[in-house]
Length: 79
Image (cartoon, rainbow, N blue to C red; front, side):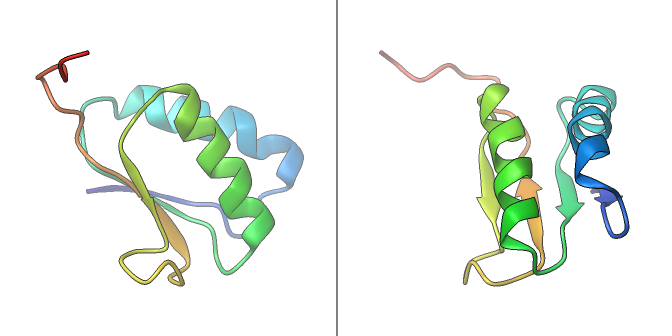
């Protein structure tokens, strides 16, 4: 799993760094380490939603300091 650690990154730079990380690792599982900052988790989640990728904030409990992006399914759900 590819990881991006955002500790110490200024919020102004998070958008560009996350977009680059997601595009560079497209089609793989990813983990973005946010620390316990709710604000940073929200920023990262909004970015991931723009890509419509399956993700989980804070693990199963929702309290862990990261956001994971699951490998994108090759099958499209029926609409």
